[in-house]
Image 1 (cartoon, helix red, strand yellow):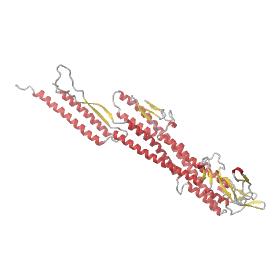
Image 2 (tube, rainbow, N blue to C red):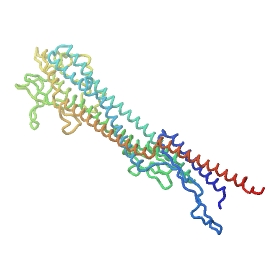
Image 3 (cartoon, rainbow, N blue to C red):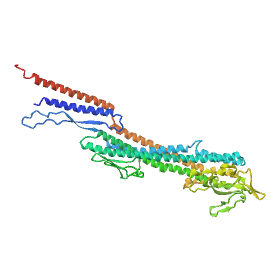
Length: 523
């Protein structure tokens, strides 16, 4: 016959087990909104039954149970879902940064709009066409000057904004690198803590949650591979096998790891944005402005024109030189000039030198050649800026008293300048088909390409966001805390606890019967 006190032990174990389950339920509820928290579960197991191998052991069938023990408190989490989430996270980080960068570049170019770069350039061409109708009009000349200044400022402003964007990306790269290094240190430190706790036979559930959260954050910044060792520690490597975290040792980006080794995540997106996207559109801007100023373009010189410089004409395999000062023959002549500067130097200004000869046009923009071209160094020729009479609008001079006098009212050069709007430029250093075309065609190809890239980056970002959310939802469905479920568990464990407590009361009454009421017959 078993001891009556056996029931007390069984009830006590039930109380302890249900109390632990209640505490774990409360822990889950308290952390329902904690980022990275995984719900925990108490694993119950029936205690070892009484089995007394002896001559006096009971012959009753079956074994007498001894209550319940809880084996462990484990967190509910699937490593496969973590891998999925981190893969989608790094891809989302890469595209998100590129999308943001392209949208900012679109904002800088500000096309199509009435305030954009193309509108300013159109106004510049219009100014020359207006001047061709009133070549002596100082107001029309001032308009050309102001629109040239506006165009220069517009290119400089766009270039400056692109440089600011590059500087912002540099700063973001520093910030994100420091952030990633912080997570690397956290993972290495938590590896050490988890190993110490689990070495004592416990489950370091909350520490593991903190470590997984740090790894999730790191995966947004850097493409990584995560492997859990038998010791419970995480080993993190880059796709090329470089160690990021090896046990309790972390290796910093910028120290042991080069930024160039990173192939995914926000940091990679920043590097691509800075070194490829921004660089590409700065190059396009340089190419456009350089092409306008110095790019080879074919123009038609009307008959009767008297040029200030020699020109080349004829087929490429039989080029000939037409000397300056000789009237262009009947039918005019096609020649190639080097952009606005080259064309401007063929004409004549309103001013005369000390000998009374008409002064030929100089380079309209400085620097006069394209060596070491930098948009920020470009300026309207300061002599023209001070005296609009030095704008060359005429292609005609006549000899008068042995001197060349400009034919006032002739606006042939101004007209040719305005027609450069439709001229086919050789844009350098671009190669292939994109390197030749009208300025408008080139500009539209740049803006069109920018739009397509932005659209693609937006599509990729939206897709990755959808995949990331789907992976996170699947993970939350496993690891997330459901308040309804926890409330249900709380009631279940509460009832079990109450029943175990009632068991103690019932056993107490049994003992009272044994101790106080038995053996009273005959007293």
